[in-house]
Image (spheres, rainbow, N blue to C red):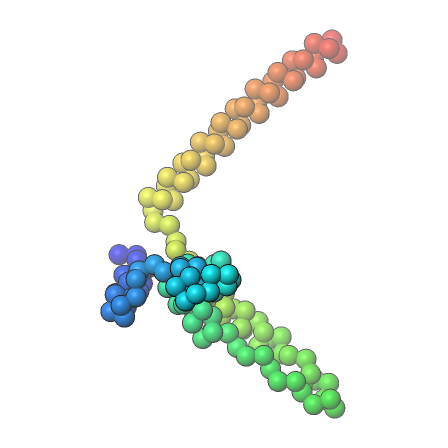
Length: 141
């Protein structure tokens, strides 16, 4: 079984154990709490309980901003680029772990669709080019 499916099953089991519905949107939660005009809390990225997992993962992996250095030290005033780079790599790795990668059947299907459209577009452009070439040859000669 794929790793993301195992995670999804584990997440559903946790939600069932806690008594939460499987998919609760932020709008439905806000409406239930009487906050109909409130903006969604998931910021449009992930719906329902998955946004809670994502927010917890981001909080866990993100580093806090460094405290400002005293005015006398110039070197301490600038953040270390290595620390920012490591933070970026950690955030990127956390984001890649949340991606739902397609399985082999989906990749095969979508690849064949793309190749089919490329062949159709190539034939169409080839015919148009051939007709334009014949028209130009007729006009010039």
